[in-house]
Image 1 (cartoon, helix red, strand yellow):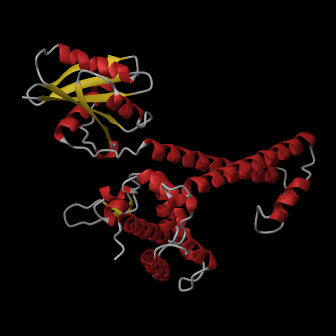
Image 2 (tube, one colour):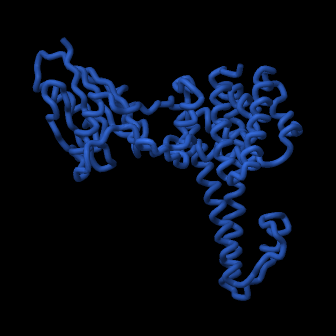
Image 3 (cartoon, one colour):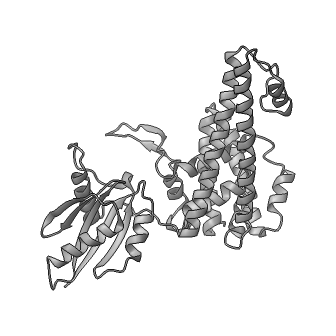
Amino acid sequence: MQSIVYVGMDVHVENFTFACYEENKGIYAQNQIKDADWKSVIKYLEKIQRERPGEDIHFVCGYEAGCLGYSLYHDLLKAETSVSLDCVIMAPSTMAVQGNKPKTDRRDACMIARNLAYGTYSKVYVVDDEDNGVKDFIRMRDDTKVRCKSIKQQILALCLRHGKRYGEATNWTIKHREWLRKLDLGEKNANRALQEYLHQLTQTEEDLERYDREIEEIAQGERYSEKVGQLKCLKGIKTVSALATIVEIGDFHRFATAERFAAFLGLVPGEHSSGGTIIRTPITKHGNSHLRRLMVEAAQSYSKGSIYQKSKAMKSKQAGQNQNIIDYCDRQNLFIGKKYHRLCARGKNCNVAKTAVARQLACSVWGIMTGNTA
């Protein structure tokens, strides 16, 4: 009869800590290895196997999602070894934690092993290498966008410290940039700092444009073009957000309902109720924060323009798409737009209304990607 040994791994950049768990033995074989490498895991498992000669052992290894990403998972499953093993990546927010004991690596490894044995966790979905590479590239592009915003704030702060204000309301127009290039702050080094900031901004914006062109090329490839085109039929979703959603999620069918997908993005309200008291809290903000931000940004577009008239840009994005998808997206765009204005008319804060719209938009994305467009 095959024995199953659950191996909890508390993994860090510097070291790995292991703990084994079996139903008839409990926790045993705790060990910490300084060599933070997948080969160390294999050596540890082979050592456990040698100590029990003749037994048929299957190892189930698990570690929390973190800085190592999917690399350890892939290395363990691809490794050529004499032991039988499986590996899972565990979502930390779904794992059962025992008490308020002092936190140590050994206790964490034991906690992971118990969660593996009892099934009190949710697996992290592992995307394939190509999707993961595209995801990393898009996140790098988003980091560049954040850096661009930071440089703009630094330029405005520099001007404000020297008492220089732009007369018109809108910043970063062509006229505002021309004003900045000609601005004299009254001191040589301050002017030099301003020019360096402007040079950094120009270089960063050029890099951002180049990244966007490359993302457009990726999205037009055979692997992604159909799905990206379908998602772009929804208002507020462009190529970057559509492709990011596809590669971050991978398989949308792992969510049984649209509500579960919205919950995965942390866009559903929380609850803190007890007895007869029901307390609703703000959105949970669990799950994928990157996609949650993209959905909220896309929801901003429903506060602008007419909800009844389709724009030229939207007609262009929908050109060539399946008519069923177009009809579904038109219904959703109208429904979501009405929902936003209805919430605002009831006195809801506009940001609360946009968050509610982002949740509905996420449900529409799930409907398109799973074929539930009836």
